[in-house]
Length: 91
Image (cartoon, rainbow, N blue to C red; front, side, top):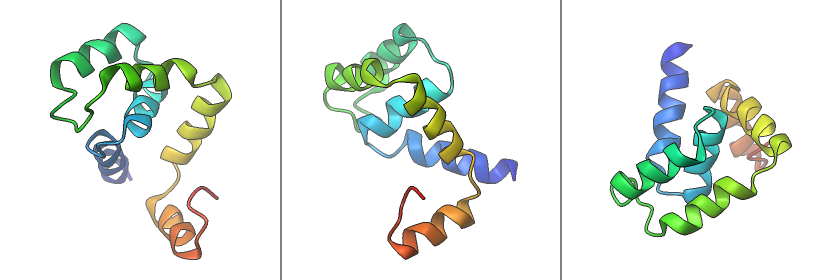
């Protein structure tokens, strides 16, 4: 199960999608300053062209959104895959 979690985290980290990356940072409890620093340092390597837009995503996430994302990220990958095949990517 731990390897599935690591795979999920890796997929989110390397997605190149600002919302997914900022969601990962928020779920992990990263501070805004840490997120901004990582984006400033390696954002381009992570596929994030606009660090300011990404930080805006970080700032706009509500605590309810963070909790829902956490729940989704810890859901078994097989279950998420089945939902994707059914056309319902977030249950």
